[in-house]
Image (tube, rainbow, N blue to C red):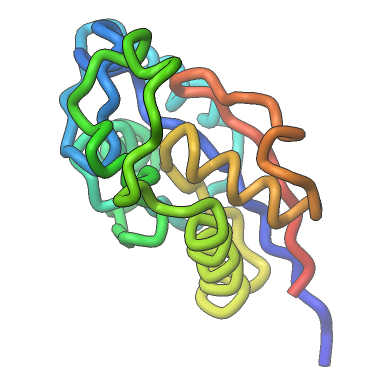
Length: 174
């Protein structure tokens, strides 16, 4: 059987009001701010020259809204998956990030192992559902780190942080 390569254009959602205020969003919906909408439009423009077959997003509003801006320039719809959701920050959700530095982590934060398992499931979903296709996936900072860590066989802290509306290309052999 012929091997097909899936191209993943992994992106992070545009900036949100909570990003701007340094609030830990976790799995809250989030709302793109004016800059985030501008970033999403610029990202859509950057991806304009790419032949894109599908747009997939986290099922959180900030990712869906970013994905819709990209998809609209390609005449595509947006499929969602909870596999691309941001890390569940448990008791840290909704808190001001600079205040969390020296705090003891609550037990209800999603573990790195669980996060990486979710990332691996997402990569497997891509192979199964989109063989030979180019897919834009709009996720979040930490889940995108986990996807890249699993893909490259690295630790999470070895993967560079993604900026809002940044895109990284991964080539997945099916």
